[in-house]
Image (cartoon, rainbow, N blue to C red; front, side, top):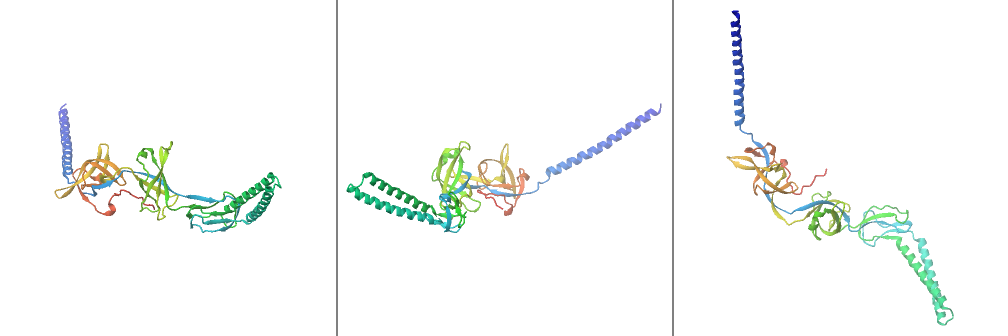
Length: 378
């Protein structure tokens, strides 16, 4: 019975020792965490490397962009109206020709012979009609006989005119000036009516056909200027003017068809070319712009990081802004910053308020800031 108090004391002693040991362990961890948190809280933030852009003032005009296709003012696939064998080809593929130039000749031997026969028949019929007219004056023949003779003259003359027209159809001429394509027939080939011979396209001026949503109809006017770009000449802009606006709206696409005319003095624009069209629809206005990469678009509002000098260091701080129209890589800012301010244009995810920043001016690392960016075609 005397051993029970001794056992109880040992258990109490072990419990006390355990409490002291665990207390020391947790105390050590608590002190360590306190100093570690204090170190990170007071650790100087590292300098963030960014690119920067200056808020610029530019003159913008609201525009609408669409796509279209160039078409020749005059363009056709020449074909034959009458059958025959091609005896002569008077051009080389790709030649430029003038209106009225002879392009193809078909065989005419039989037709010329028929023309001569009809001419002889007309001469005989005319002589006979003249003889009967003299007899009719002396009342030696009836009026009906004279009428039949004169009718025969008229019939032969009409047949002769038809044969002359047939001969003209066997000489295919250029209906307008332009450039020829690649011929589809060969010398000596028999062609039936409707056989396609060669394409002929006028070169200058040239049409551009495109469509716009009906909401822009009230802002369209004849002689209104527009700009077109084509992939073949990515660095060049072509200027034209609206020359036709369709009087109706498509009930399926809700668009209006528009046609513009370009002078095409350099003959660079070709029928069938795809074009990107930009049409100004409002008066010019002055705007403040920055690269779109400088803006953080958030549910609570759009933010930029404004850069300011402070104690010899460049500091970035958030600034709420209001944005407007977008053109290419640039975005309009209507409120929040002023012309000449500098904002971070890249590296925004690494920034926070009062962050110390360093600007990298390497041109190869600058984000795009083109109002009219052009894709690079590989």
